[in-house]
Length: 326
Image (cartoon, rainbow, N blue to C red; front, side, top):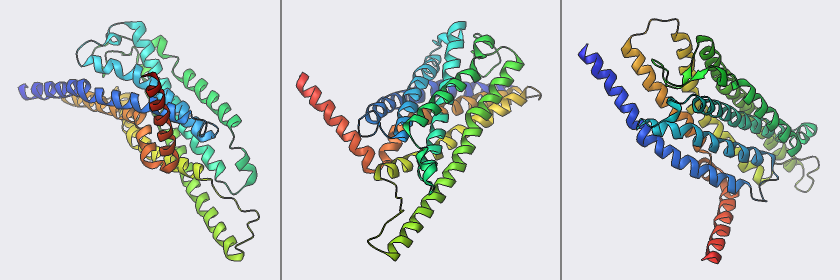
């Protein structure tokens, strides 16, 4: 019994330390990265590109998710989390965190769809890749994300006991609905679509390269009917595929844990197993926040000269403004 209590206390202590220090690092790097992303992607050279616009809006939403969702977790490390004791803050925080994460992931899914259409050998399908269609898709994703989690205002309360978080669902039906919606709508469905369209994009690129090679063999001067991705689109595509891969890696564990938490209601679980589940849930939540905070650093590493040149131009402008003011 004593060993069991020591094990539970140790896990709780590690969770507190992780929230105090690791969560702070995620908060700083995630906030700074998303702010820089918004500034870089809003430059004139990129904001006319449908995929870049989706990256921009997704980064802004990720910033909101980190500010609203991660701040209370940091404060919880010092027992200062107001969402754990104040109902309206609990409801608002959970709604914003879940809905913004859903919006951000679906916007990246929409970007994958846009790149698939742009890389298509079919001319009509390529024409569907436009700012007008992207804006329609964004409105649709945002509205649906809000509707999926609006029930949280009704069934989430603070001061919950024997739950992974003090701010949690009050009824089994509420927790079932939230966990299933998050696992399927927020994680599994967009992840599946991103994988499918990612494979189709790679297939399209291979086909275009083969067709370009055949045309060049026939005639080095005649390029009639040949389509080739622009340099900007090529780099944006690479940025997208890397982000899709890491999004899936960081978000799938929490979705699996959500399923387990849902069906754990019908199982007899020991205190030791319950403590381990809460510890793992805490880690997986932070992994999901890493996914929200990583885009700028991914884009810098995988975005080629296009994103790095845009970043350099931004820093040059900021330096000139700072120099003029000083």
